[in-house]
Length: 474
Ligand SMILES: Cc1cc2nc3c(=O)[nH]c(=O)nc-3n(C[C@H](O)[C@H](O)[C@H](O)COP(=O)(O)OP(=O)(O)OC[C@H]3O[C@@H](n4cnc5c(N)ncnc54)[C@H](O)[C@@H]3O)c2cc1C
Image (tube, rainbow, N blue to C red; front, side, top):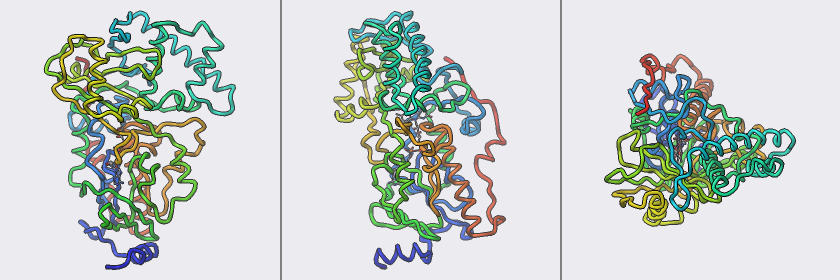
């Protein structure tokens, strides 16, 4: 066995033979690190790919398609698989009200908040956000959304809300925080509304995203439980070392691990990442959002999509998504974002479920105990260390360009490098496709003979079978 140092020296000089068994010996080999939607999308193209995810598909739990339209890069696949979507909101919805077509809010004592008050405070919140645009124009330096809201309220006392209405306002802030998976004092005023939202509104993927992942993963060489600890980026080869010390060598690699994993330095890069790349990784925020899914043997709640709890602070507010309406399963999903999501992770699964049941029992004193519960821990899971990226206050202009810029034979995918749709499944998918295309181009230029490889991808095949997206309301 060669000493470790000599392996990396050989690799950096480009003399090390690939150790990945080639399915097509004439094709360049690529390792994709990370098996979420982005990694799987990257691995679909017709080069010789091996995927090294630490665990199985992490976006299996997800359920909303943000942008039910043909421009959505996942639309062809969803159509082709005949998956059904359930509309949760139309085209005119803004980021924080995308599930708010049918809902009931309750106060901490379990009394329902009058619907008229929820609508009126919602309108006030829109006005407050509109006023924050003036604050943005006045300040050269970025501020947080929370700072801007407080400036607006100081200037316009008539927009302030008291008592229950104040709690409803806090609930709208809680909803906004859920979109970014971060607290309002962390979210950039300059960037929060700059996201390009696809048209078509939002739809629940009734069967979840699993069928999408399954179809994309077909025939890809996937090695589960291969957590990469080191990546050596050589002149002609890349070597990935996994936890048990095994090495995988290929012509190039595409890194699609979550931003939280990159931030934590759990993967050592050799040579070290250049300062501009490391700074881009640390300057982008990573949020946290957790779900506590409760399955009951009967339905004791009203037939609305969302059940919310208002409180004096956005931290104390919360909400449940009712999956029964769209899927027929008696399931409620409690959502927690930002610091609250981290705090929930400090509880055992049982205590977290008890906490959520207390909230539910305030609204419905006759609520039965769940027959099953599932608690996510995206903030502390070593394969995610956060949920998705968001723009921190003072984000540098060229951050995303630096984040997605390749380094020799190393390419970067994952939701955080998406062109326009960070924090979404379709954004992560496009980022994977883009990284794979750039990697292909680079390898074909480097290795010559463009004709050798036909750049026909699964996506092109399925585009030919286009049928309309199936969306309904039940
Ligand atoms: C609670 C929650 C709800 C969401 N809801 C929605 C929604 O409704 N709609 C929507 O569009 N988006 C939603 N998102 C966002 C969406 O999940 C992400 O943007 C998307 O799944 C990211 O995909 P990815 O491939 O970039 O990353 P991931 O899916 O996180 O995949 C990263 C992969 O890297 C692997 N990995 C980690 N470390 C290593 C390592 N050291 N070596 C090898 N592999 C490693 C992981 O195991 C995983 O396989 C939600 C996210 C969360 C957390």
